Structures are given as C-alpha cells and as structure tokens.
Image (tube, rainbow, N blue to C red; front, top):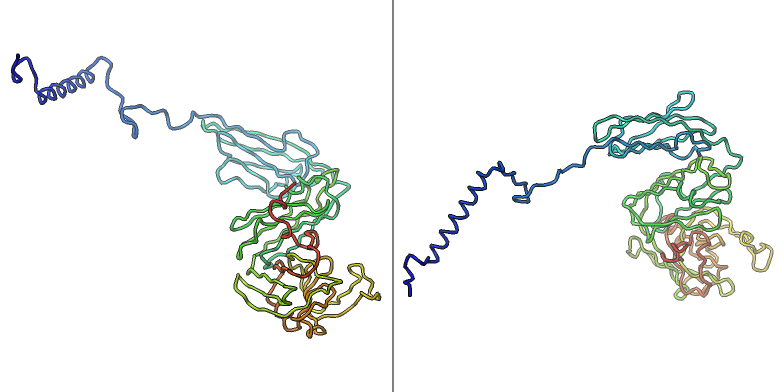
Length: 406
C-alpha cells in the first residue's frame, strides 16, 4: 500500500495546480496556433460573434396613388406617395395649367399626402423622388384625370358649431341631404379627433343620417375636432359630396338631471355633486312622459309650445298652443323641460302636463342657464313607455353592444 504523500499520488491541492497549468497551456496553444488571432468577443455575448446590426441596403420603392394613367378619379381622394426602403426627398403635384397642389411629407419620411382637394374634370401630374437605403436616388412620375362634374351632389350638416362648449352626452350627428348608397365611403370621409383619445363608433339611423358617439360619457375638458370631408368623394351610385364641413368643440362640465315621476322632484348634479333639487310636474296618465335618458338638443328663450308639431291639432281637446318664457328641447316628439307658471301648484305633488317637464319660471331659468346642449336628463318612474333611441338625440338608450351591433 502506497503512502498518501508518495510520488505516485497527488493531493487535492496538487490536482488543482495541474488543472490550472493545463488550462493556461491550452490558452497559450490556442493563441499561437496556425489559425491566426481569435475574433474579439461582441458586447453582451462573450466569445460569440454577432450578425450585422443593420439590414442590407436596398433601392427605394415608390408607389404613387392614383396610379399612372388613372381616369375618373374622385377629386376628394388624396394624392399620396409612399416609399419603402428609403425616404421621400421631394414631391410635386401640378394641374395641367401648372397650378401646384399643396401637400405635406410624413415626419418619418415614409411618404407624402396632398392637403387640398382637386378639381372636377382636371388632369394632374405627380413627380416624386426618394433615396433608398442603398443611397441611390429614385424618381417616379404619374399623370391621372379626375372625374367630370357629377350630376348628383349632396351636402352634410353637423349638430355642432365651431367653438361650442357642449355636454358629456353629446352625440356627433352627420345629416346628409339625400340617401347614401355607400355608407362605408361616407364614414371614411368623416373624421373625429379627440384629446384625450376617446373610444367611439358610428351607427346609421336611416339612409341619410349617421351618428358617432363615445362608448361612455365624454370626459369633461375633452377637445373634439369634427371633420366631414365629403367634397369630391364618391358616396355611391354617382352621388358625390358637394362641400366639406368642420367644427371644433370642447366638452364642458358633466351635468346630469334626474326627473322622478314618483317623488315629483328633479335632482341636478354638476360634476357628480348635487347642485339643486326642484319640484316638477311631468305628463299625466293620458300623456305620460316617456322614460329613459334624454340628451339636451336646443335651448329657447321665448317659445310657443304647439301640439300640432307632433300630430295633435291645436283646436282638439288634447291640443294646445302656449307661449313659454324658457324652453329646452329634449326630443323630436315634443318633450321639453320648460317654465310653466300655470302648474306651480301641482309641481312637487302630481303630474299634470301633456308630457313635458314643468318647472317654475325661476327654476327653468336656472336650469337653462346652468345646462347646455349635450347635457343628460333621465326620466324615471313616469309611467310612460320607454324612450326610443331614434327620438331626438337619445343615443344613450342603447348600451354599447347594441350600439355597435351591425
């Protein structure tokens, strides 16, 4: 038996020394081998070479729209230039008489788009240049002709005006002058921009009116830009848009009023804080006020309430024609909240109106001074039928799944 310290055996420490020496010798041999110097390690992956960090250079690919030689182009469609594998250098669009068409390049250099409409029955030439990632310039040219002036055109109206401050329940309504055959084309021409960003969707009510509303009530302070860029747009079956419309509005304070036919009271809150409770009288049993959430449509100082506007002759037993000092429209079917000094004795006690919400003159004035177009009024416990979402601006009668259902 051999001694643990004899020449034929190594201690643990000795084995470690031999291993270290062997590793060192291997590294020296590798460094001195005939294969040459080793490749330097790349950052983040020690000892491993990395692939190139950029794609191989490519020539620019220019795409012009309308396509070269196109005819019958709708003049409301934008002229565009897009660039793949490069950046746009310059774009020029000119009419046959040399008149330039204004436009703007995209910030990232990936393209260009015109910013003004074209004329009917005109010829235009597009010249564009771009530089590819290979550093080589590329040019392209296109000539196209727009459609002649159409026989049928339509206008569009908005339910908002420039600079207005509106309520949190306001829907954005676009009403065309005639039936629209191509709804998708019409929606494409309508643009709603909001700050902060707000989710919303279009829904058509008939063939000539489309409404955009947010998923939930607007957030107070939201800035809304509405653009109906229908000029020169083909809206189907030879119908073209006649002129553009636009407006910028601001969403004001959140005002919600709840009119309760059981307590004969209306509670008004502003920004979720109760502001006032007022006695009211709503529709009597024979003309009960429809129940649901209304959106304020318009305000009037000095207004004649006329039953014939919703089909009841003024000289009939149920008819009337009455002047009121303050009146605010809530529906197309003739529902208002308004001053009614003749029913003050019933306000807070019983429902005696023809369907409207009666208030004292002072309370009607306060509410009209406090509220605005787009504010919300909910009628509860009135005994009336459900308010129809097509009656006025009563879009909140539909929940979001119903609103977005096709």
